Length: 337
Image 1 (cartoon, one colour):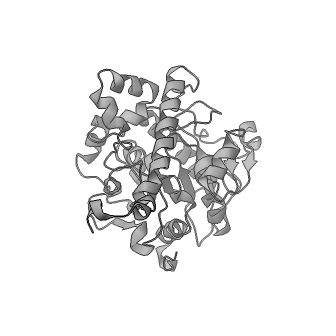
Image 2: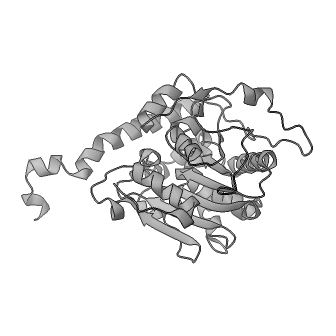
Image 3: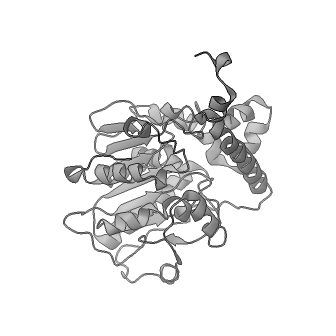
């Protein structure tokens, strides 16, 4: 049936039509965030996470002991509502610095949030599930003001350095030589890949499991394209949110990660994309170049009617099973809807 002969009911019920209000809210939110950041409402501090010096006591620092643990959440929206008044919250199940990895799950799992998100917004659903599955789970905030709501906006090279310090801290506390990373958006794409490629992460990371990563950049649903088309807008956006422009398709940051190959043979990569992603666009930008150590899938290949979009993927039941399978392929289960 041609577009011109579709009835208005089918048009209103189409996935594209249902996604439009979400896109409008995203544009409004990101525009407001960018303005607020440019006005200093959300400062950027670098190297927020620091590694525990070698030989120091394993007793948690006061800041660790004082970390507020937020309740489990079922959706990104619910987690965000809680984070508005508890921006530094740790998701249930994460950051137990006394946790000892088991023989069944010897590597700690480090959760890496995405742009404009924080550890609680992203992982209030998945962290407790991973903990219940027997993993030692850790989550950091990076690329934003310490204690601030919006994270993942700072220069990604500096964010990768923060991730490196946090991974070293987790390795020291748990006695594990390597960790597994589970990331969303920026946190599963170009930022941790920079860490793996340029900051020694390949020797410390066994697996990178990514939900809707931005491996080849994104247009941010047209926002980046618009910024590039308006003289000076790109510089303004970059000043307010360095990570935003670094993630755009064709940026120097994205291009540099392609040089010499997109992946490291010492690390296993797993990618789950969703066709209804309106942030990483096109959604195929999530995919890495094919390699023996790369496993990639699309949510709708398993659940054709599932319209879960970018922000909802870390709370999606099928995505949760995908993560568990990627972390422990020897005990993988069928993905169900």
